[in-house]
Structure formats: C-alpha cells, structure tokens
Length: 144
Image (cartoon, rainbow, N blue to C red):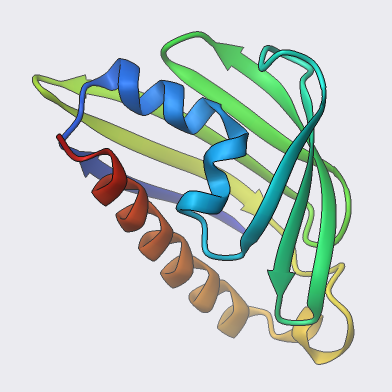
C-alpha cells in the first residue's frame, strides 16, 4: 500500500523536522511503537534503529535505517528487517509560523502472521486512520 498524509503543525519547521528526524521520539507519538534504540550511527544517513512495536499479530521487532536525508527538509526511514516492510518519507514545508508535514510511504502487511496479513483493504483503512491519529498526536506535542 502506498499512502500520503498531511498535517499542519503550529510549530516552526526546524523544530518539527528535528523531532520527526529523531526516530527515537516515535514512542511519544506513534501508538504502535513501544521502544526505539539507536544501534549504529549518529542520526545521519545510514543510522540504524531497533524498533519494538505492538502489532495485531503480537509484538514485533524491526531494524530501521535512515535511507534518505536532506537536513532540515526531509528524511526517509526504511525497515531493513521485521514484519510489515515499510518506507516513511517525511517532508516539512514552512508555512509562516507553522509547518506542513507531509508523510509519503509504503507499507505491507505481508509479514503479519495469520489472518492479519490477509486483511487487505480493511487493514489499509485501519492503518491510514491510525496514522492520521498518530500525526494528530505529533501535532499536539509540537504545538507552540
């Protein structure tokens, strides 16, 4: 599944970018993420993280890397291992005192065990709704 979601955040673009580009902040705003540990790198291109998530099929572990980075503008995270292979590309656009955050991505449920991996359109709908809620939580955290 490919998707694009947008949220306007009442915070300056440098602040939004710094927060989103630091994958270790995800447990604060992404509901399925329980813990993130940096395993290699300094937060630049190639940095790798271990991500512990709660998925419909149970706990999951992914290794994720920064695979694209334009400082202050955009960052791409790609799962290297684990279920639900994904790529999340975040882009910030300054809007005066606010910021538009655009998330473009791909994700697959193919790695989920049992029926959860076969839900197709229903899973996509639930995922998009969950991601919108996550971005809403992120916007609330960064407001002001």
